[in-house]
Image (cartoon, rainbow, N blue to C red; front, side, top):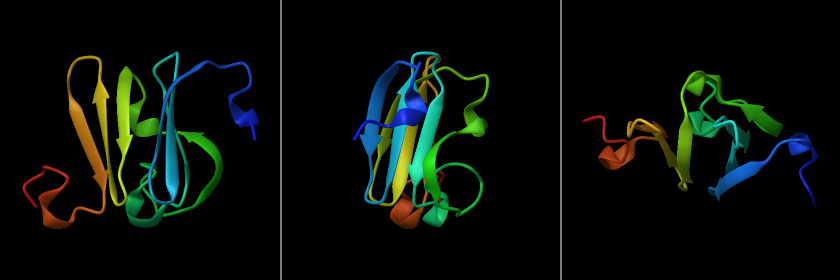
Length: 97
């Protein structure tokens, strides 16, 4: 079924995790929806989102790629920076934890 929340926008990339999903729109915004457990969605909380919601943590950044894993996610911006969030066991976030 078509995701009507993206009506009028052009989605250029998508990625699906175990219980959450991401989309990047042509204006380089990152959107997420699904389970917010472990901060998977990037909204700073653990709330489930039933509809796509823009990830405000990337406001002003040009998101060009995203990868949703089972427990963590990665995004790359146009300047080559890589961001990681979610459940950080076994050092998977690359933050030295």
